[in-house]
Length: 190
Image (cartoon, rainbow, N blue to C red; front, side, top):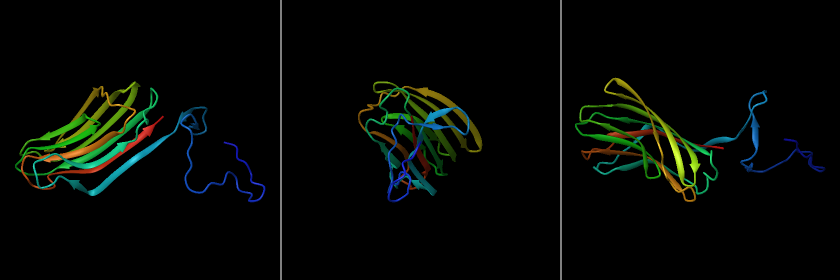
């Protein structure tokens, strides 16, 4: 993008703080002729130790962010949701869920003897007015067995209102930190 040299300062397009670039602006990919719209992280929640459920039997929010209204303003806009967590050893049933609005993208349900790690990647694309398609891949290592799965869901979240994206944990026994979330990342792409 060409700059304007200030007559007094000599700086090119000097700005203080952060600036906005219109969503129609394109970035060049490497040195090739390919151009693409920008994107990046909207939210990053991370904890090495993990954010765990409370000492109760209710579904507890471990990480949450609200995607502001009108982020999915045109068909083709995308949200990438990535989440990871762990299910600990306890004689209880345990659930780790990932939500896009009221839509459950993934529900890891572990029995009383199961433990392990779970990872969710969901690419949610606007396909119409308050209509999305979500392509979800999951990897779980529960009690030493790797399970990979893929699914496609069709959420109908209002795109003119905020959309809550969250990770929750729940245990059937009132013991804290049975289910922990280590990561929730939300990216927005034009």
